[in-house]
Image 1 (cartoon, helix red, strand yellow):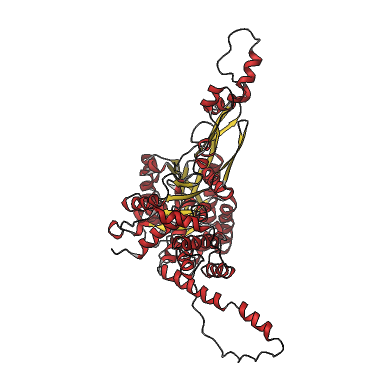
Image 2 (cartoon, one colour):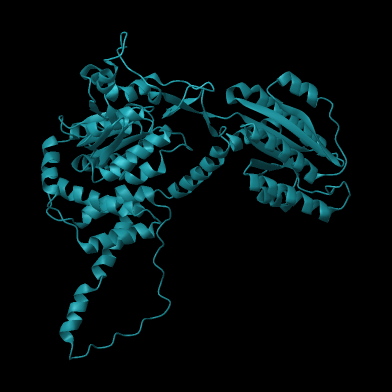
Length: 586
């Protein structure tokens, strides 16, 4: 039965992870849900002992369920604090499968990675002080699109990075895994030692591949030990190192290792060794790293063979798109008392519309019930079944994304600007048609002659936008500074209201009207640069679209001053412009 080398590596990674789940950290499984991923997970499950914990971590798990703490129902029944284990502690000695890791909450990621580092969880709340062991390996299921990735801290701690999207079902085959072989390898694992020369070779290869993380060589060594144990070896051999480098270092490479440079000059002949210290020279020869150098070259050759030629360029391109889209994908997260995504609770009072978190309030009150019942025994009247006091109140906390408002700043000067204005009008209408999905508002500012004016205040109304934009004239000078000042004031007022502004400037950057309305290109450009710096200082997300027939350096210079993204688009129509704005702002 034939099996593709890439699928063989994926199955081998599952076996190495099964041999040492804690040491290798885990597997980042970048794949959409489907039969290929199910087949790989079934292979991993077959390689793990049935009695070993195998837990699934849901996306929106509560902190109490993740870390453990007070068991509320058991505490109320028993009349004394009863602790419960969290999911991290339940996975001790086994495997934790993280669903949709690319959308995992930051707090969950922090708790998870902290438990991986400390190999235990700590709970200090509700009158409890608990430390529970949490030694586990992680399988992170990353279903993100091209610009969505699992948290960097989690990726760095996972030894194997696999991309199963490269496989079709016909490219995969069932691979029989013998559980007895895995158990025997686990028994041999502790006896396998690594030599300092092998550590040096792995570190040298990681440096040549541009890997800056110190965890990567460590994980590669762990994988090499697991490989030696799996293939019934007593020491780590060269094949184990090359396999570990291919599986651990190759997916993390940021540069291709440089080819050896030809010698520029013939080296001088070696001098004969002196006769009186021959023994010392023999010792030095034994310590020369010739073997290490050869091992480095072997490891690098294995990694290069595992790296497709275009993988690094694609990786850099996808990283750039991720930065560009995440900047304005949605409004900023903001704390809220009334609505949004729950983010826990805090001790407080019921005022200003705060919402009581009933479960957390009961959890805070539960440990004190015996004491409060004794205190209430001498009082008249019947005591309630649960005694809740003011200090027990826990107020729910929420976070919600603020509303995003896109401000178009359009250069309406000159005859050519008439075309740009028409394109901007069309783009505004297209974006407004989609505003309910994007939860956006749109505003528009035009500048021409010596002034700038707000043509369209922030709105979601398409009909209002069409009425405001209809029949707008163009022509005159280019008061770029006035347009940027008007945009900054509007963006600043939006920001003060708790909303998130994004500014889209459509111009050729050829300013010729100064702030005071006087003509003159040098002063106009200086004023425009000063206006552009306001956006950088305030941290307002901005995009500059150069719509001139021949994009020049002026608009790009203003984009740098604004710390904005620069898009030269000399032939764009309304549809292309709307797509570019959507791609730039999310």
